[in-house]
Structures are given as C-alpha cells and as structure tokens.
Length: 289
Image 1 (cartoon, rainbow, N blue to C red):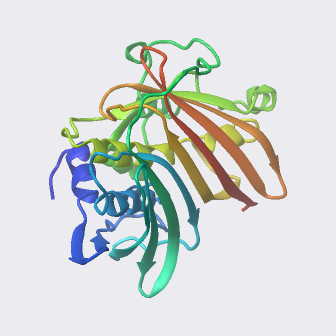
Image 2: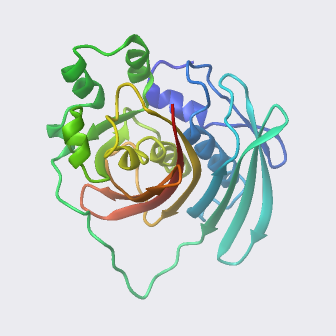
C-alpha cells in the first residue's frame, strides 16, 4: 500500500478484472461504519469506462445507493453493455458485496462533436482564491485546538485538499442565520497521472464528500457532534468539459429544499477560470440521532 493519499486513491480506482465485464474493487478497512459512497460511485464508473471506447468520455451518470457497504470487504462490479451506438454508449453497473446489491449506476458516454452554440451560468458569487484559505484540518484545529485522534487519522488519509470559502460556523446563532449554501475549493493532494478516466472517477469520488453540507448548514455545525444520521440516497452528474482533478476546482453547492427527512443538494463545479466543468445533484436521508 502506497503512503501518499493521492496514490492510494489511484490504486483504489485500479480495479481487478476477474471476468469479461466483471471487476473487483478493494474496500479499505477503516473505522467508518459504512463504505464511503464516493468510493463506490468512482469504482463503478471505472468499471463502466473500462468496457467503452476511450475516445468516448462519460457525459452523465445516474446512481442509487441501495445498501451500506461494509469496509474491508471487496466489492464486485458487474457491467451490462446496454447500448453501443454511433455517438453514444450506455453501461449499467451493479455493485455486489457478499451476495447483496449495494449500488446501481447507469452511465452514458458520448463521442465528442462540435456544438452550434455555447453558454453557461457563472459561479453564484466571487470567493477567495484557494491559496488564501486554510485547509479544512487547520480550520478545525483553530476552533478545537487540536483534531480528535479519529479526525487526525482521517485528515492524513484524505486524498483531497478541501478549503471552505466561508468560515465554518460553530455558534448556534450564526447557524440559525445561515443560508443553505456552501462553496469549497478542492484538488487531489498529489498527481493522479494522465488517464482522463482516472480524473473523472476521482472527481466523482470527491463530489460526494461535501455536497450535503449545504443541507446541514442552517441546522448544525458541519464538524463536531452530529444531531443527524446522514446517508446519500442517489447521485447524478453531468460532465461538460475535460478537467484534471489534481488542479484546483470550485464546488459551488446549494440546497433548494429539505423536508420529510430528505434533503436535496445541487452543485456546480468550475475551474479557476470560471468555466463550468460538472453539474451534480444528490438527495440525502437525514434522521435525528
């Protein structure tokens, strides 16, 4: 096992092919109660991408988290070749662990072609440059004095540098006044190589890390004792432009609604020049503990 967290992420996304259209992914033994959803989504997309023409990058994915995965137990990804058309390729992936389906993903791949027009929405607001912001671990240390041992271990294993554009809120009065919005700068903590599929799957991994923050911001501190048990229910992404996940990208996030124990979050990912790279939508389950 390599020591660098970015190298570990690349290794995690390097699936073992055990049969035609069947792949096996590692699931590291960690203290978490369930496998991180971004890991399963990223590995599932790798398995789909390994069965398609490299000249057709993924343009969208739609996924459901069906059961929590168990850390330390391998996950098998079964790929169904739904369609191979002149311009589009479709793959359906079922993730199985210990004989039970834990995740489903459908991904569509598109042969690049010229478009007749182009437009995009800019980021919702101007934010500081990432170099001027503290890392997530440093910001938590500034409030708590030091990270709890479990958080310190997590910070050392974290494959992405995360920097919140807004100061984290700890005071209940600040939380009550907060809007359900969040913006973070992110990038892999080290080089990820030059395979575009690895960068796409690494960003898919990262897209599940902070998106539901936007739902929680008006309710409780993002870091500390949680009042809710939280789980991702489904996840959808649209990839608009090529990118590198080891270069800074801005994840602009908002939650338009939370009700009935579920919260919806939307995210737009931009590069440093303000070009929109990816759109993300996710719904999460929130239960009081």
